[in-house]
Length: 585
Image (cartoon, rainbow, N blue to C red):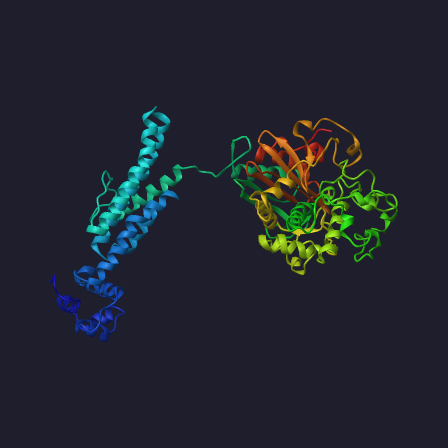
């Protein structure tokens, strides 16, 4: 019956089984009318219909489908090409060279004997290739000279065989795969072979690296599991019960996890989309924003800010509760020298905030540009000048230039009502939650609201030099002022030391700066309302880390975290006052 039509074959097989059309319809989901039309050759049945009829008649599909079918030739070429060509995907993801043709073979083997034959040959060859790859790697480690030749020869030879068969199957519908181990054979019962193939695939998968690793600054590796276990241990020992961490390598986040609670007393879990008060992480974002405006010729780094305004800064009527009130500068003789650069590198001469003055009045304490002194007020002064210059508020400028371009949908310099759905509380030294401050007016030095996910996006953009030019990042990440104080804050902030000369501790534009054997490092901290954060990037290696905690004692584990995750033993942790929780007093 090799040349008979499907209608004739169906009628023949039905009568051989002794079924009427009604009985055959009853044994399938195919209607009597459809069977009649097939036998009269009024319709060309769908392949699924043919399969149903073949099952009911207890025969193979090819006993109903004519061998010569013009339409079948087109389908055959497509599926055969997929079987032979898709193993090349294994060059990019291991095991795809076996898994893709295995899936195609299981899906198509019953449709045509040719699919079954080619699929078996492809799978056998690709499993053999996996074994050869493992053996070649072993030879590289164990056989001198020739081991390297064997190792680099396997892949090109196998690719050559695959390409040859792609061409061969297009021209002749045939294939040839030498030295294949016959895991699957051309016989009806292939269950054992199939299980063997799947088992070998799993084995090859398991024989590779079992745990993902991260390369640290010194080239050593640490597994992600080890990092997670270490963080769990540190948090438990230090009683820090809320933290988000992102680790960067090759300019991308390679480890992102959140631990603990956003509300510890009520045991409400922290997530990567939970709003977290950014504190002085605000300054790093503001530094990039200012450089964007410098690129847009809105402002210059070294022009005195006073010169941009039509009247003196102290003559403006305050529009906020306190931060744009500069009336106290009317009697000050040095503030007019302050530039944008001095605001960003903390050399304005302002104290951190005006309430650190005995009379709560802002004043300049030394010639601007000559001495480092951490100051949020400097950032506020620059912000207010920019707002008056552009006619836009800080929040609008940040959304337009930073948050929206980076997809930081849950970040702002002011509280948004949508943050009410999921926000973290800060916690004091006793682990008690603190009231959330939601009425802050936007300030470039310290009102950033963000999430672990969003701020990771920002740091990723910085590592990849997005938003602004390489020249602008070079400006930010340069030491504009050297720092020789023993501590960043407190009484020892005025004590001079050479302790940090070896790392050339200094400050860039909105970011701290120091040097290591692996290139420069830039850092930014954040601290306030029960939140303590730290980030450090190593731009020349593409590595870095972001740590955000909502516990006042969070910085007590920073030193050890930096050493474990990055082998960063250079961060000036004493200057930062990151005293370990287990330090002996």
